[in-house]
Image (cartoon, rainbow, N blue to C red):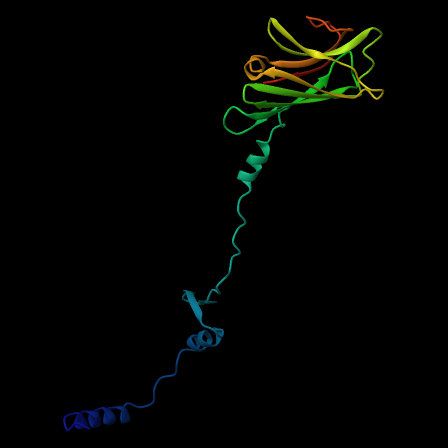
Length: 202
């Protein structure tokens, strides 16, 4: 120990020896100390002790589904016409034909394949009634003020038939409707009012 510190420490020891007994701690301090739970405490007011806040773990909220709901709400009925294909003007078009007054229980569909400057129309019909005595079915392309006969056909006993027609791709592109009518045997140059099936091309 340093010679300079020893006299000073001796003086402090003598002062403590003559200081007398230490005062008792206030009763409130003892109560406060006993009220502190294990783990520590946080003082809020002079006479209030509350336990330290424990860490809480919050589960992450799930992602909002608003975007998905909007996407579902945006879904619409698939159109009757689907056009697909690659380059070079080739493509495939599907057309659904809906029944009209002459064939209320009937149905039909066409598949149009463009290959180069030609388009092949494959038409299938089903549940068609008889075209009538001395009559036949005829398929047409049409637009406002213009009707183009594709050809005539007959159905089997169940009212079903599949036929194929050929047109130029340029000519086909000018028309907007495809439909089937009942016509006199041999066909007509203008469709009658006995419409069996009808469908839009665009």
